[in-house]
Length: 296
Image 1 (cartoon, rainbow, N blue to C red):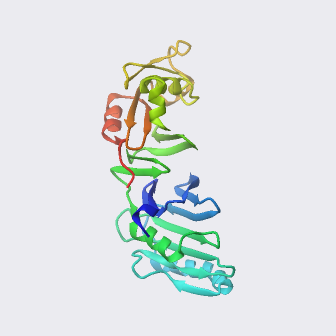
Image 2: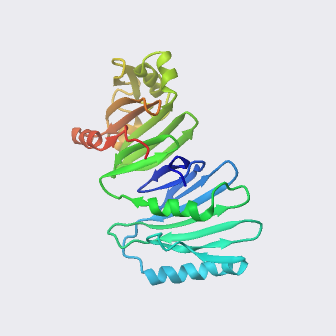
Image 3: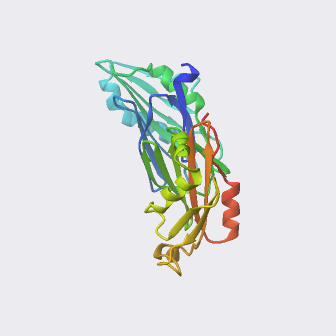
């Protein structure tokens, strides 16, 4: 599969390459288990879930459960083939079904310290443009995980690095405007990526655009942002909240840092607001956020 035919996906500690037509369509994290789905223009192609076990997972126990659950599929399949032997850490099978359908069921289990347990399903049918074995091999060979330091995030045309202490708590992934919300304890980071930065600049400065976007956001009820230069932002608390908004008081976080970064190689504008408690928090953020991280 040619290098131009795939892109990098990174989410909540794991990352891998997928065919370029596959994009994130669903995500959620519940009780430590993250689930995502990716689809192309025709159908869902990938379902994946993972968690970071609190204790070591018994390999034989996982294998027995996998074989038990896969038995019904084996009975329905016209042919069952094992995964390629070079898919290190992955166990599973290709299930060749009728009507040109292929289902790949696999799990990844590593002996490396802090490694996640990953389970996935790949779906192929007559509308698929990818060959199942090649698509799985692409994903398996490129699979990586990270649970400390700076964590990569990459989906659609957005990518960045963020300190592992920040956990995703909300998102709005619209065309031309991606909004991700992260929490670190009671601190909160709101991050936007706006597309078509060249058109934004034709209408004014990046700071003016960012200030208007932040002032109309419902995520920041107590904040008023102004342009403090072509690419610099300043903030003040709105007069109606002289001692703080209820959310600020509940979190005991009354400080803000607003910033932006033009990303010309992606024709994007990254804008963020970090709501924090003490100066050391801002140091952690500044050292742990890399908005210019390129998509691999």
